Amino acid sequence: MITLLQVVVLAVIQGLAELLPVSSSAHVIVAAKLMGLDPSSPEMTLLLVMLHSGTMFAVIVYFWPAWRQTFFSSRAALLRVVPLLFYSTLLTALVGYPIKLVIEKVALRHIPNAEIEMIFGNLALIAAALAIVGCLIIFAGLRLNAVAQKEYIGWREAGWMGAIQGLCLPFRGFSRSGATISTGLILGAIKSRLEEYSFALAVILTPPVVAREVIRLLGSRNGIATNELSILHWLGLSLLGLILSFLAGLLALRWLSRWLEHGRWHLFGVYCLAASAGVLLLHHLGF
Image (cartoon, rainbow, N blue to C red; front, side, top):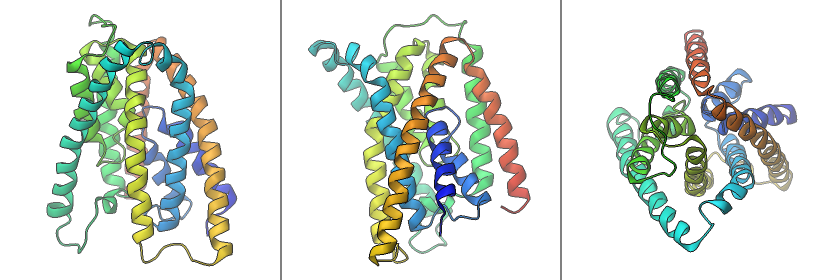
């Protein structure tokens, strides 16, 4: 049974890492394994759903003033951004879903009723994904002064960011925010607009992801015990995790903004490469 201290640790890690370009899923999975927890168990699924919900609320609270001045400043502004967000999300689905099917039907074909979640705890894959996104972030950071910055997100930027987001979803360690913002930076979009747009995509994406995890939890034969005490215990811990991840997420967003504005974006890539090496070491140690 997970303890209160473990929930606090995972919530803080989720809140800090979810909104930084360093992959929260990789950090939470590694932390859970180090604490002897099974990240794929129904109980952990419930907790992680609540943690993701907390960081989604943090995104909405933090970015609402900026969204109100840009996306919701006028009817024309709203009509301009909504098709872009729809376009990005559509490309995310068109890229991400086929990759999911290939993994389930080809790579995991020997496992009955295989689901992509089965590979989420594979530390070797997490290390590889962290290394790839780390290189992308470093490349984008070093190119910041080499390209002219555009004030608005256009169809080109929206399309590439959506497609890259789709590539990130099936692989834990491939930071969604790190990859999408880096892609926009490489294409020359202005940094502040990239933050707003990338996390608007996160808000759109989170509800269906959360819904999928809830469905998986309800459909699990090994779900949480149905006695009242157990349900209340997990509900209380999960709500606590939501609150803590919300607070940690707000702090992380403030840090992210400062690093973006002061040209330190590439340092997140350096961190991802170091994290990749650490995860690979844990993999070789048998975790």
